[in-house]
Length: 112
Image (cartoon, rainbow, N blue to C red; front, side, top):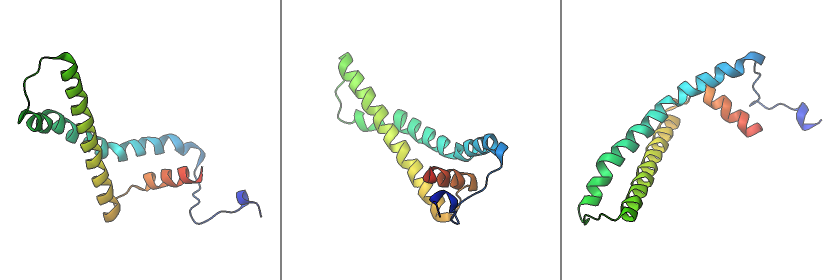
């Protein structure tokens, strides 16, 4: 028996016209994670990073120094935003709130 002829329990039959609607469903399922990432990143970028840097910082007018500080702030806020989304994903996985569409998409990508 060829591998293509075999089907495990993970195989999912998909109707031909369902691809577009599942993409929309997947986008709506990802919306809470996008919102979480955005909120955490913005709060860290505008509130936490300036508070952490202003404690011992000297006021420097050098453009290169300001650019480095801005790049550091963006990297720091992106890292904490991604960490927040990761924590949210772990909590969703533990509590069983993962969308069926997301699971289908993950299984499809694993088989490809």
